[in-house]
Length: 385
Image (cartoon, rainbow, N blue to C red):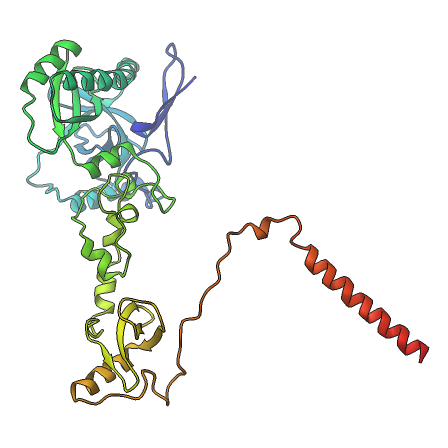
């Protein structure tokens, strides 16, 4: 019998009467790391710290003080406060050292907790029992918080592996006095209670999901530190300021707005100011939009409208701006020695229903028949002559 604990990134196979074996569950564990040096000899990857995965996005680094032979996917018992916790080894060897530096841990000053042992059959059974209680505990805790009229949302509950402590993850806009809540929860569930406040982005990462790009959420798959995102990132990239499209699953601005922000800033360093109109002898043109990587700008003779759009290169725009500052008006936006006037042509749109129509080939077939008939008549006329 196979039991799936996807929130822990592992699948257990075996019945309650037999020993459980663990297999790494690819694609469902949060913040998973690809071990691209796994095929190297272990003698070259000696490192006494391992990365351990707990529920969803919670990870930790633990010191393998007993020199156990640990591999990715092993279920182990680690030091906790109080008691012990059960986790899954997510990374070992040389890459852990790089992960520790990336996260910002100092191996010399940081006090790493220890790995006790590989989980025994009794440890795994108690761990599975604790996992089965998390959903009902979360629902009950939400009811209790609502009865106490606390302005907070309990988004997730994680039991410790020995079932002596439970972590309640919550979201709140303001500061919440949950001292009474902790007393009620402790009496209700008979465990030590720890309240941990998280943000909307962290909650989305813990829950998981699919983004508008069709891929797994970045906060769930690889982001561990969240940088602030502003609407200026969208403005610089010439993205429409539509709140519905700019917001992610968490309701905040999408983190991916920052990914290419620096590239766009570097690309448009030498671009002229878009607020400066271009003066010509025939009309005054105002900026409408910019294609940064194509290094071209569109101008319209009607301010605020897309009528009579003209595409002009950035170098030509800078030349016209320099001439206008001297009081000289050019004849045309496009230099006669350069490329021709590029005006935006209207684009026709279809609803796509014509492509799926059963009679879409009928007109072509009739046209071919007419051609064949005309050719046949022509041949007959030649024979008669």
